[in-house]
Length: 90
Image (tube, rainbow, N blue to C red; front, side):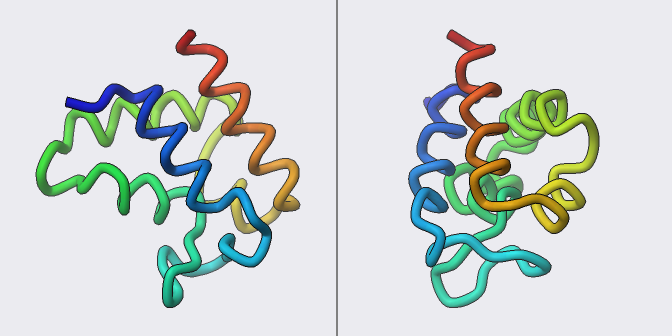
């Protein structure tokens, strides 16, 4: 079973390139927002507790809503938040 740390690492890889990151929509033909990437890696319907725990860690680094942060910050800022969240779980 994946851990929140591994889910964040895998989700970050999905949006690492700017052309794979999007705003305002979870998934746009293989492009993902932050939450969409996490959902893609950890299906909330399959494991809602793990999904929720992972989102909670990222929320702490984004200081609130993952969706709002993703939609109002630059791609490098989003990646930096993922990096901080991953580091917090090391």
